[in-house]
Image (cartoon, rainbow over all chains, first blue to last red; front, side, top):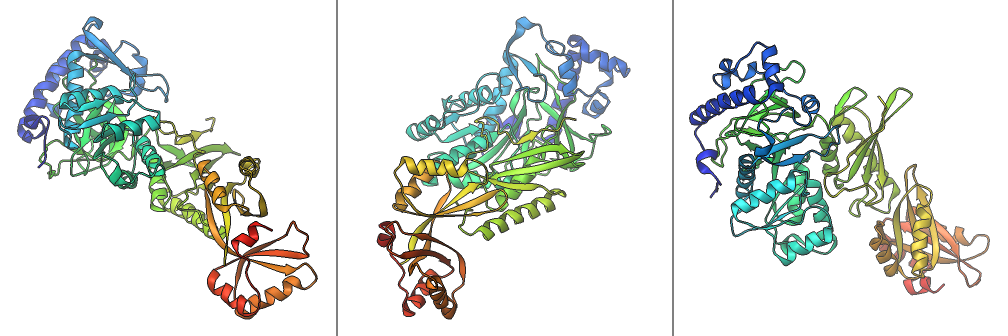
Length: 433
Length: 144
């Protein structure tokens, strides 16, 4: 039996949802027009007034917001409420430039936490569960978001935050944690560690994991599920929109339901900005429709993705997004070819290696060099040099057929690739372009 | 009786072999024989030691990838033709050698020791025994 946190919203018939979205979108546009001069100027530049937006069919008329806009407007330019009404900020890691700072009223936080609660319930969570939140707490939205969601569901919440792996495992076993929330790379790391400690899937009390904040492959999911004996659910979000819980997976594990009562999703052609029909791959764009402190209209996520409205067996009616192929921030252009780290991960796991790798890109004599360092595993090591070399060569061949360009593969000793306990450092780009 | 060789994955970089040897030195492990096979970026160190189990554990605890590989050890007279006669028995028995290496014992007993890796260790051992060459056992190799 599928369970829902807010069935009336999560399973709302499409017609009713459109009505709700129309009404909320109009209000949101009015709110932005009156309270966010930065965006009002963008609308005026197109000759738009709030009256031009009567329904979600008019959404395409509105100008986009990009990460550059957020940087330009930093820190208060996109604020939609006086600071005295705001109760919290969260911020991105700032790895791709200036930090993004998002603001929340108490209502914004409540709605965000409800989104996370929906994800936890979709993963089977109830007030009987013990939910360990191993996402970082602090400016990063992962910890605070899932922590709030876990409270709303009524789980016993263990706020371990990230890091200190042995302590994480101690809490999981001593307090019999049933749900784990963290990044997929940290989940894989915890799984490895527990395996090393001699724990099999049956010794691990966890039954579900909610893993997000970075791209991961289907193969990695199966790996984690097998090692820990759990069902692993994907969750998606952006600090700009609230945090994790913008969309989440249900028991069907066939894409993530976008919380459409709060966010309208579009897929656009990243080059022309044109809206693409359902089922086509393009850049994901979100419009928040009931946010107070940080309302964003048509925010370009840079995530490459596909949407589907096919009926989901779980009973939720909200549109589903496929796991993003990669954030275009993660995408590398090497010798003119688009490369996503998730593609490399897929090849590694298909070949029996673990997802412990690092991509090193440099430029020598005006040509990109492309190296993939892969950690050797005890399972893949044999005493036979030609066998190991043959496996290495197969990796090179498979990468080439997946990516279309050749990578040099170097096998390295275990645990030599830096494994941050939050997001994994997958890419070292030394090109000075 | 095959004996236990320790095979270790090593990156082909300065200091890696030394790092491994320092670990073994700390634990008082004595190497009987050592052979290295290498490619451009990695290599395999193959060792015969006086305590194979401790060695495997120490390496594993320190994040080295190591495994035990069964190999055959023979003693031959340290004189011209000693190895050739032994290899003649391999040829007659039709046993292919994947790799081999040699060392001299510490006791100056006039013998040289040969380590062989073959595909089917037990069959090869039986065939060589029939030809009059007895493989050394673990105790013998650890006390040379």
